[in-house]
Length: 369
Ligand code: SAH
Image (tube, rainbow, N blue to C red):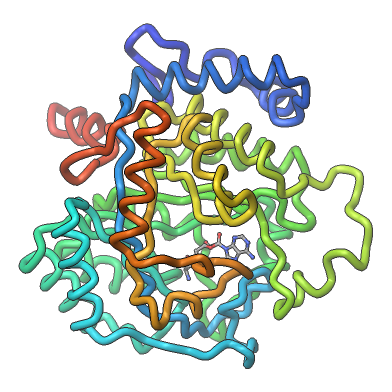
């Protein structure tokens, strides 16, 4: 039984080859789309159940040395007021997450060299020691030595989206850092070798992304046997090169639109291809469709929500795209809101650390070998 195949009698990826994936991604017929949604939900129910796990997202720094053409945190964006949380601010946010019953903190930032190997290792040790929460890091492209040190310090998971499997497009939107040209797919392999739970994902509707690219993205999720997969629509940021240029040129014929429905179909197909992975309903889809984006993703196969725990004084500055964290209420209210929306869907809030069943299975197989 290969990765991505349900072993419980449920149809997993079935016969999803490239032609089927392409057709399903482009399917606009409401009835066929509903059939895809139901199929994804059946696999989601069988493989990860009714629980929706809550993760406390703490955006520790919006400093970034990179120049990604889609992202508002890019170094040349002088209109953004920069911030970096102190260790105590991060620990306070994590304690409040623990007291509200969450099992995981996600520590995310721009690519910020001031978050040194030592500082992050110390933060991870204190988070584990003082809160007992599972710790996910999402700090961009860092060296294998840093990733190893943080794993040794106790970090459980790492998120690094490969953004698009189209290598030429990726290079175009994500120029190398001076003197450091890491390959994200190579880093995902390093993370796997270090026995992290590995998360990745893509942006849906990135300018220049074709339907065929998106099919390859889905195939790459399956090939990498990812434990967590985040996908969200592209949202243009006016203070970025891509955000400024989009709208000037008409989209090409094969361009994927960054829409809620396409994102729903990508989530559904991801669930079919990677049945046991944890799939978040991302902030981007909720920003695109306020008040219903989370529901859309959760009813197309997603099983994770990530309420924001970044201190309210700074949260709006983590502006990867406009509107990110804009409607931010307190973290306690964000959790209450998430619980209410999960209950309204007839789902339950997950307990414990919500480790991906994909990891449980891989470690069991590895341990038995
Ligand atoms: N520096 C880290 C974290 C970046 S923010 C890293 O690069 O991994 C997390 C994610 O936000 C990115 O991986 C990207 O997929 C997404 N993102 C950034 N800008 C975006 C935009 N304009 N629209 C949609 N998603 C975006």
